[in-house]
Structures are given as C-alpha cells and as structure tokens.
Length: 383
Ligand SMILES: *[C@@H]1O[C@H](CO)[C@@H](O)[C@H](O)[C@H]1NC(C)=O
Ligand SMILES: *[C@@H]1O[C@H](CO)[C@@H](O)[C@H](O)[C@H]1NC(C)=O
Ligand SMILES: *[C@@H]1O[C@H](CO)[C@@H](O)[C@H](O)[C@H]1NC(C)=O
Image (cartoon, rainbow, N blue to C red; front, top):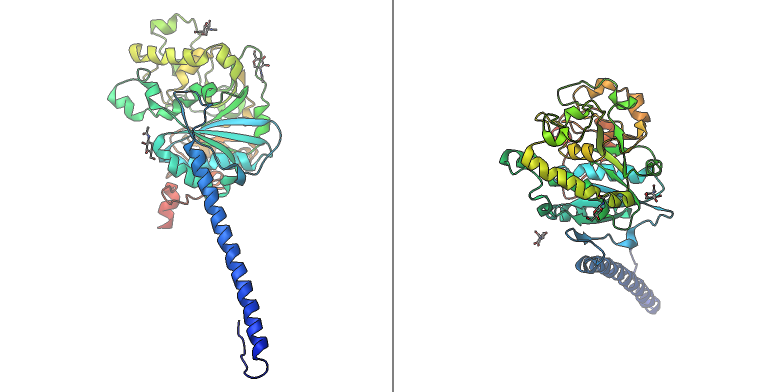
C-alpha cells in the first residue's frame, strides 16, 4: 500500500488512517497466529492420542495410533471394515489400493492397516500429508514374534517370507468388533463400489468367501505350470501322510486368498486362526507344501482349512494374474476397465520396472510426500 503523506491541516487525518491500518494489520496477525496455534494444538492432540494406547486392543497386537477424527470426512451408514497390510519396500501399493477403494465408494469404509514398527512413521506421514487424511484408518503393529515356530527356520526361506503376509490369518484379532470384514492384498486396485464386495453372500456355516482359481474371468488363458497353478496339487504335497489323511482331492480347484470376505463369528467359532497355525507348525516339521510353490506361502494352510467350506466371490470382483508375464495380452483394455477389482499377483508389480496395465494403477497412486518411495519405472523415467 502506498500512502501520500501531506503536511498541514490534514496531518491528524493521516495519523488516524495509519492507526486504523495498524489495527487491521494487528487483527490479521492475531488471526494468523491463532491459526498456527490451532494447527499445533491439533498436532498435539494427535500426539497425545498416540501416547494413550487403546485399551480395547487384544495382545499380542499393539495398536499404534488412530487418525485425528477432526480431519476425517464423516461418512454415514454401516461401517465396512477393510484389513490391509503396509510393507515398507512397497508402501506405494497400500496407498494406491486405499485411494481407489475410498474414491470409488460413498460407503463408510474403515481401514485397519497392519504394518511393522519401522514403517509406522513413514506410513503416517504419507497418509496425513495427502488427501488420504480424510480417510478413516487405524494402524496396527504386527508382532513378528507371533510367527516363531510357525514358519520355517531355514535361512534361505526366511529371507523370502514376509511376515505381514500372515496378517490375514488373524483377521478377528485385528477387528474384534466386526461381524463381517474384507481383507485385501496391497497389490490391488478397486474400481467398483466396495459396498458391493462387502455384500458378498457368505453361506451359513462358512467362515469366508474366496475367488476360485477356475472361475471364468481369471482362469481363461492362465498358462499352466511355471508358477500358475489352479488346483490343490500345485500347492500341497499329496505324498505326505498328513495331507493324504485329509482325503482331499488333488485336482480340486484352488482359490486365491488375495481378497477375502470373512464372517468373523464363524471364523472364531470354527477356530480358523488356530487351525491355520496348526498347519503352519506342522509344515515346519514335515514340509507339506509343494517345492515349486510360486504363490504366497499363506495359500496352502488356507486351502486345507477351507477345503470345500468356503463361499465364492463374483469373478469380476477379483480379476487377477495382472502381474504375470503376458498379462498385457491376456486381457483386453475393455475387460480391465470393466473389472471391479484388479490384482497384480505375480512377479511384475505395477510400481516395478515392467508390468501390465500400469496406467490403471498410476491413476490411484499418490506421490510420497517424504520422497522415499518411487515407482521404479517412473523414477528412471524422470532421470
Ligand atoms: C518402534 O519404533 C520406535 C521408533 O519409531 C522405537 O522408539 C520403538 O522402540 C520401536 N518399538 C519396538 C518394539 O521395536
Ligand atoms: C455369520 O455367522 C453367524 C453364525 O453362523 C450367523 O449367525 C450370521 O448371520 C453370519 N453373519 C453374516 C453377516 O453372514
Ligand atoms: C475351538 O476351540 C475351543 C477351545 O480351545 C474348543 O472348546 C472348541 O471345541 C473348538 N471348536 C472347534 C470347532 O474346533
């Protein structure tokens, strides 16, 4: 602002104007100051919230924190509990998955994110500094000690075993209040309304619904062998006594546990978690899984426990194998567009160097505000 100062009889008026201007500036400064203080108070309350552990959480899981409810957009209606894991080496995956779920639904989605202690700060920064701060989420720390004696001690396999992959075995422990819940792998993108998936019918007596590997949408064109199995013998060693005794048919269609809809009442009634742990323990002693197991090590125990006792998911709600070689030729862009849920299971992840349909995934990815994570191809492309 420019003021022309004149001397003479108008001096008084000029001084008055200055006073008024000063007052306005003071008021503006005070408002700005209050805004800053308020911001800090929000952070402080968040901090205090973090410091007081939630008494409801069942051990051995440690609940780390909840988001600040004041920044959430409150959504009404029945809560849809979604369990997902966040792994440091691929943290962009859970971000894209959550963003796609949240954006494509008006439902009251409540995420529970299971992660390891070292990832909490990074994950929290990513969620709170982007538009995902409006999402209702809770972070829970996975206790890796839980797996001792349950996964092979063989140093070679230890390297490849990712503890978080077993989080899905403990769904009721992470969601003690829920009756029904969804588990999602992190290498997915949801294009439909998650409410629809949540409404998947679970038959009486069944604890969960999975996608059968023989379902029409994804079985078409699967290259057999070379890591693509669609029956029990691809996962379990039927020569082993413990497996033989179960009397399961080796050519039964397997299912993919990357998407699970669970009835947690049934899960608890049938002691599903304990049963899964039993088979994990037995495997460490008797090597029950096939040597050529290409998919996740979580599949074989699930196949045993849910043999002929699970409901199915609409095939369009789990279009998979997008991470296998040749996926780009197997599905047409129109089909991929029509899919409700896409799953990049296989070696070629959409944040990796080469993968199919990465443009679809990119739409949901949000850059890491801390700058630690970059999709590989994008990173190299920038240079
Ligand atoms: C978890 O990480 C925090 C730092 O982020 C550290 O202070 C704490 O000791 C860790 N807890 C465990 C159990 O490792
Ligand atoms: C879950 O299972 C229980 C026990 O069988 C049953 O009463 C309940 O209706 C089921 N809930 C859902 C949402 O399917
Ligand atoms: C589940 O475990 C409890 C306690 O260990 C036991 O009493 C019950 O019979 C078990 N139920 C099933 C279906 O195995």
